[in-house]
Amino acid sequence: MRNLDEDTITQAVLARHTGAADPRLREVMTSLVQHLHAFARDIRLTEEEWFAGIRFLTEVGHITDDKRQEFILLSDTLGLSMLVTALNNRKPRECTESTVFGPFHVEGAPEYPLGADVANGARGEPCFVRGRVLGLDGAPVPNAELQVWQADADGRYDVQYAGDHGHRARGTLHADAEGHFHFKSIRAEAYPIPHDGPVGRMLDALGRHPWRPAHLHFMITAPGFERLITHVFRDGDRYLDSDAVFGVRRSLIADWVEHPPGPTPDGGISEVPYYTLDFDFVLNPERTA
Ligand SMILES: [Fe+2]
Image (cartoon, rainbow, N blue to C red; front, top):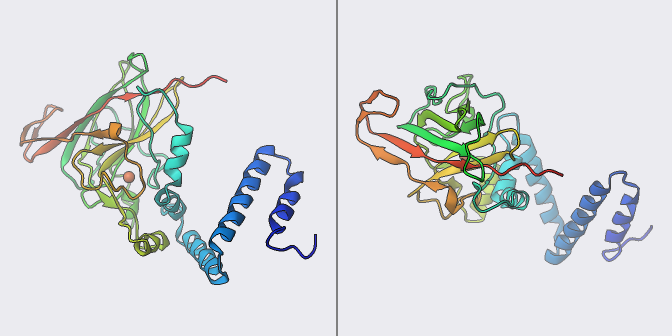
């Protein structure tokens, strides 16, 4: 166990893990150490580069708090989040595809009745969203819980504004017994992921832009079905083919239909142009062990 060198260090570390009580932890750490060491050998990591990496991860930690999740941004921009999503969400083609969770979900968003305006003062062009939650057989999934969240006209989520202003452009709703849901919000807009921190500097150094195509987030849960975490993307967005976090799926792109000022689906009158989005979600039955 002395005089370990570049050829023997890997096996020496792995030998220390034989006492791990959790076999899955041992498997994960064995593979992680093997890949980390192989990576360092492969690129002949210099001491300066090793230190730059430590400094970078330290900065990612320092900027992270309960509202800013730089580690998720890092995972997202390296494609790891989408890879994990893809690995864990293999399901029948007819099901709505999953995509990345992202860093802007908030626990405890207010519950709204169907038809309510979840924008709650967020700036943006009015948009009426409606659809159904269905099972694989096309039958309605009754009373599914839908959590929705999105950026405003300036491409920012409520949590990116300073001060306590309550929840805006996010909420929790329940579909009715026939699986129908509808609510009012604002038109989704493209936005850059927060790029004033270490992940932004990384993207810049790599010659990458930080933009995500316009989208509306959904998390849908119902007893007997797998939880669905996904977005609906706005067709025509210039960033659909270069999403900074690799989350776009063709089946999740939909038309935000523009309407002139006039009568709106909620029975009101809009004095400005407004949009409608129709999208149905198909849930996968829960796997039974
Ligand atoms: Fe988002």
